[in-house]
Length: 154
Image (cartoon, rainbow, N blue to C red; front, side, top):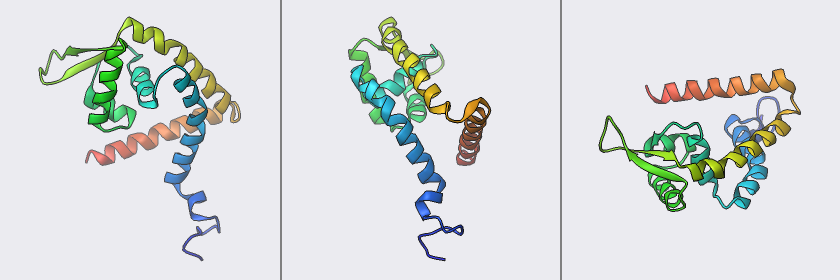
């Protein structure tokens, strides 16, 4: 067996989970990210607004974890979104060192059409798999995330 092929004879990257996840994410995301750019947002700005769209305020560290970026980068994104009037920072009731970020009415109005577009895009992608397989795929990914997050916190 070659070092570049798996036991099944498949080239390494075509059988490597991390690559498959990254490749699938890039292919699924790229098409939608063009819509994000057309709405005048960067990908991280979109992710922050989408995360805050559930109306729960979050700390910068929580947002950084969710949007898959480093805290200083997210702080800069929040600065831009705040300057645009889409988010506002407020004080945490439990920790004065932390600020909580939430959407403004303008932020809600700006992200709402993108959320609908994201749902339509997701539906088009998942239509290839049917409802049961789509649910199974999402469940498997959520479980993988849960397991890896739990393992990381040990």
